Image (cartoon, rainbow, N blue to C red; front, side, top):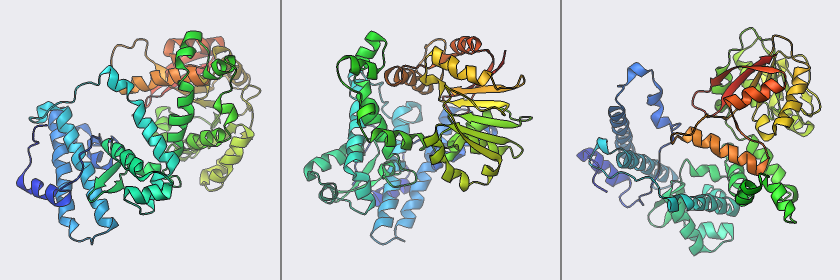
Length: 446
């Protein structure tokens, strides 16, 4: 790796903050507050992406200098280690920018991953799963920092825990600070099982429960059947039907999206003039509440299975918008409550075959007024896959995930038009959602 151009002040700050820190490869997330300035109006920044990235690097290194100046104000302890950890995260981000964008300086580029490297990608998920299952995040949150301390709390082998921590450090989950101590990064704090921002259930959901079904992907593709059917045909039973932990993990994951994640979805459709919005299969009601907060004249109906409605009640008791909302228990394949002019189905229909979708939409068709709208919020597939794009990859991955786990599928706009038409609806438009891979498919009664 060639040197990144640094000023003497920056070099001094880096040496002071983290003289011996382990170098890890990481990428700074788009939602990191240190990149908030990138969300300004276009006129606030130059349109040249290389110059914009240079501005980002300059600002990030400015943070490092500020942190170095603040370091002496903190005694040895957690506050100082937190400051060092944050500084390391910033430096790794700067390093990644220079490695990935050669035009910013004389730095190596990161080549595209090889097929073997892609095949090795599962190891990250398994390492995260091990950390989650062992309680590494909780142990580190409690103040434990060395591998022997963490291992004792987790009832694990100290040398093996050290090796796990080292691997987690290479992709930004922890940072090693000498001598032989580890600190959770902001990313790694998601491994805390009791934190309000915990991603513990999501790690177990994807890296364990779903991964178990994905291990049958070859046979799913060979037969066109989902994993449960494949396993049953071989004389076994899916973990989803035998693991007592699975339902609770699933429910926990369905409620892990932060409230701000629903804002762009709620903003994608113009609810002006609407009277009542029904969220079918709306789970905990986060999307419906977001819509009601934005539109004080609207009323809402949250519809889901009885157990989901029971879990949603505490949230609605604490929210002022609940006075404008009714909670209704229903099986969408059996019935849909009347009284709304907007019916929302978010990540519901992709779990069904065309026949299953027609059954649900048929129930909606029986109660929706002539001027009503159905909003189907799903990953809409492009008609062709001609470029590498993370958002498109997410949609395609979800499509395979539906094959493996439900027997459903993601659909193109043409396919949505066809299935909606067969259920008595006409597709009106497909609305993008800012910053998200999902789209809003708007349909009217035909």
